[in-house]
Image (cartoon, rainbow, N blue to C red; front, side, top):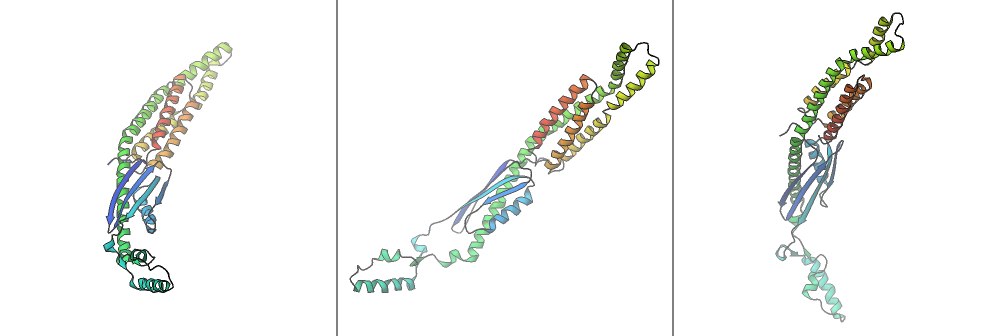
Length: 294
């Protein structure tokens, strides 16, 4: 089983009890929260609550659609019985009509009248229905177990992809740290050239260059952003081992992008800006993959 799970999957289970047979299918797709939609056979209203509780115990996010398709075996003639009281009433009425000139009723005509033929009482008794409902609930659990396994397999495929993006982010952060260390010298040299061209003979030019360059270097200092990005990388790796991690990873992606944007805005060199832009691109790719994590 993978450390993380996905949110897309499918599960199915079949079952039978008495003269009932059924199949259960459960599907899920991405979703910010857990949403369960259920459709069951008429007369088994408590199955919906069971399905939702069962899904909540196994899943934390995703849109889940479940359905139970059930059918009841047709009763054979041997399973039916004649209600003698109702038949006698029909016969009495038929004989009265016959005495008045009406056509005497046929046997098949009498048997087709409502209430004459009925199913054995035990088929619809509460205990029998409860047994069928309990068996259907068990199949719902089995379908959800299969769905969870399917989502775990998706997580197994997602894990190396997400891990690779995190590794790439770490690489860009390290390269940005190296480039940022050279920013102070670049800022001082650029400012010194500008001042020398504008006022080469101004008194105290060297001191002015040093002070202004120090101010600019302070504004361009990205060490704090790089430290936070490094911490976010460590947090992302930890979350991958602490499922369900999807919601927390969603939030972490926002923090990643915030620091990357600040890094670009503070950049004083073309090289650092380029690294910042590449960093943002990889963060966006990671964010797209994180949308699939439970």
